[in-house]
Length: 199
Image (cartoon, rainbow, N blue to C red):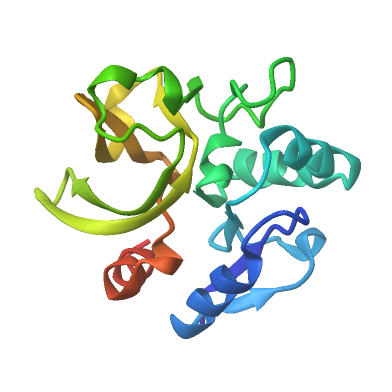
């Protein structure tokens, strides 16, 4: 039986590249979130965009309720970049705007992290960076595009990390049936596809 996935489209994300990656991996892509009844269907919230605008779309289109229902039914959820950040309750990017709230912790701005210790300091983490795969005890370059990072309250759910100045920050997590990546596995070549295929 083919694996199934539904990709949330909130008009500001990299839906096409995520879709292409999962089709290549043999997934059947569902086109109606209201038709998802199988908890094994992977609900994907992709990245690129603004936290506040994304949440507004999820609320006005009644998608937020469906995401929470899928989670409460034991369904699997994958968040990529902004999609991972949306799993938290709030973000520095949009003060006062509530996130999905499935992961406890904070979403902070990279500019507050060890600014003076970063050569050629930039407020955005853009491009390929060495990423530690904690459970496999190896590292690989993965592709990043972000200004904010996730800091889970429970550090034991962190699965991947990257370095920013002198700090080691979360770039991947798994909490029961929720998986998140700050980097873009769909843009990270074979290593990224292999990671998605292992979900």
